[in-house]
Image (cartoon, rainbow, N blue to C red; front, side, top):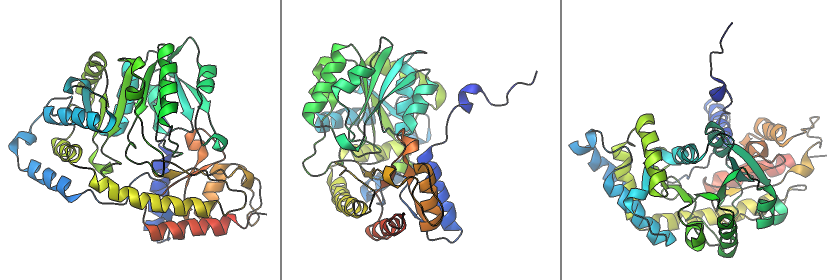
Length: 401
C-alpha cells in the first residue's frame, strides 16, 4: 500500500488566491509586461520613519538578540492593551494579549483554540480567503451567510439566526470588511452582538481595518457596544494596514485569559516569540499618534471615490460604495457569457483571467471570497496606476457584446 506523500489535512489547504494573483502579476511585470495589480491588500506607503528608527535601535540592543516570552514582549502587550482602550473603549490587561506573527497567525490560533471537530462557525460571505482554511485546519465547519450588493454586503440578524444550528459555536464578525469594504453601523453591531450573547455564542472579531472608514461610516467594536457578550469575545488585530507594516508581521489576539493562555501554549511550540525587532517597531506604532494613518486614509478616500465612479460607468457592472478598508467589490455577473473578441467567460474567474491576459490588469475573482460573479480590487496603490488600471478595465469590459 502506497501512503500519500502529503497529509490529507494539509493537502486540503488552498493557496491564498490574493497572493497568487499578486505573484502572477509581478511575474508578468518582471517579464516586461506593463501589468497593474489590484490584487494584494497592501498600502503603497512606506512604514513611517519613527517606526523604522525604533527598529534600527532595537537591532543594536543585545536584549533583543535573545529569546523573549513566546506570547510577546511585556511592554508591547501593555501598549496593545492601552491602544485598545484608546481606540475601542474596551479595557483589557496585558495578560489578555497574545502577540502573533501577523494577523494570519492570530486568526488560526483563535480558531484552533476555540474549536473542536464539528463545531460550526458562521461566516459572512464574501469573506477573506484565509478564514476558511484556518477554520478547516482547526476541525471546524464553516457555515456561510451569503450577502450581496443589494444590502451593501451586510448580514442581518435574521440571516444569522437562519444559519444557526445546535452545532454553532462561533460567529466570525468583520467590520470594516475585506473584501467588500462594508462597515456595520454601531446600532447594527450592537444588535448582532446581543443576538450572539442571547444564544451563548463566541464572537471572533477581526478589527484590523478599524482606522480605515470613510464618509459617515464609523467603526464600533462589538466587544464594547455589546457588553452582554461578557468574556466570549476574541479580538484580532495588527499593525499591517494601519501603519503600512505588512512585511513586519506583527498581529495580536485579545481574549479571556484562559483562551489567550491556551493560544500562547500553542504558539510556544509553533513559532515561539515574534521577531523582537518587529515587536519594537510595533511598540513604536501602537504607542504613537494616528497622524500617519490620517494621511493614508485621505489618499485612500480619494482613490476609493475615483475607482467606484469609474467602475460604475461600465455597462453591466455595479459597484456599491465601500465604506471602509481599501477594497471595492463590484458585481460583474451581467458580463458573464458575453462575447469578448470571440471568448465568452462563464465565470468571474475566467473573466478575471481574460482581463489579466488582454488588459494586463490583475484583479481577484469573487470565487476566492465565496461569492462567484464579482471582482475584488484594492485601491491601496498610487493614483496614476489606479486611474490607468481601472481605465484599461473600463475599455476592455466596455467591449462586451
